[in-house]
Figure 1 (cartoon, rainbow, N blue to C red):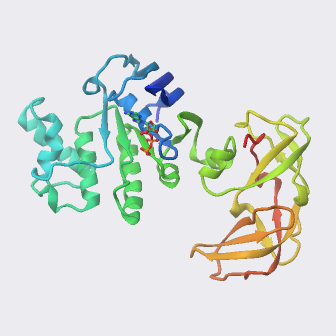
Figure 2 (figure 1 turned 90 degrees about the vertical axis):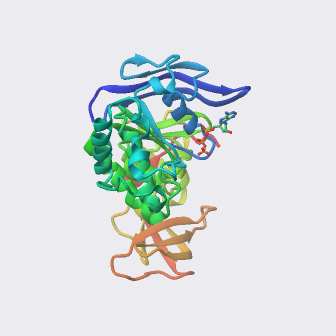
Figure 3 (figure 1 turned 120 degrees about the horizontal axis):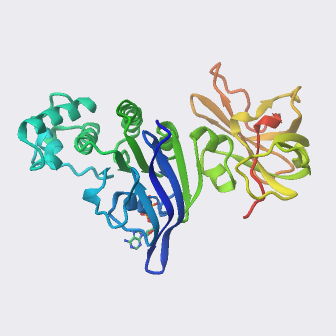
Length: 366
Ligand code: ATP
């Protein structure tokens, strides 16, 4: 990845009649970056991707690619190429002809053959030119669709839910393959997905959209560790959300909060939070909580509860712990190091948490 911006969106908005599908989109993407637009169905992510591709014009604002304004530039004149969700490859053409499709009539035949071979090598389908399109597995078809886009040598590859048609195992394998391919080619990838794990495992940065707005743009680790509000905190992974009262906010980067029955604890101020008041909410990831039969030593905040549910996931065990103070049970996830489930339903347990594991989520707007 370089520090050069390849795509810039400035004040971009898209309206369909009186409905606003995307608004206030300001975004800069770096050359060679793997960027994902993530959000629930209907939040406007495909609309943003289609505006970058040139399939739709913004109602307001401007898009620049590689330093050039895209105002009025049609899709086929942009340095972008798109891989669609339904990777419609032509069933009557063989693999080679499918991949060559966009180059026909643009360059001479020997060059086409060379570039087809090169594109198929890139997606690990080398030598399969003559294979019929119908004789391919789902994963191979997806790779043909990728090769067909890559052969055009785009500066930016746009991907609209590229793996959603594949089953779970294959999807996970393709996530790694696509990430490796993107890194070895150094092309900027912009992917739309509603799958948080897909976005987290593949991307350098993620833009999370809700109701037409970009709510947070950050690295996967920061989105997980420092989400800017309740919506992002709950959308990316699981989060216990508790009310807290700010006791002392003098220090620039830290504050003491009172987490009701958990007690008082010093936590870091979240730099991504823009609204903070006396009453805030805080988040604790299930895997950051200690669960033990006795009051855990060395934990500044502790609380007693009763196990209300046990779920065994193989790699970890998930407990729900009901407490007297909080309405919702608290979720706790424990790695399954020793192939044991330590607690049963109705067991009395203690929970403990360190200040570094409590995330400031600011004033709650709900
Ligand atoms: P999904 O994951 O379901 O594809 P998305 O986040 O990609 O969702 P968009 O396809 O960008 O969402 O659509 C955003 C909103 O704009 C939706 O409410 C959709 O119904 C609406 N919309 C999209 N295209 C049009 C159109 N051509 N005319 C009218 N409304 C549209």
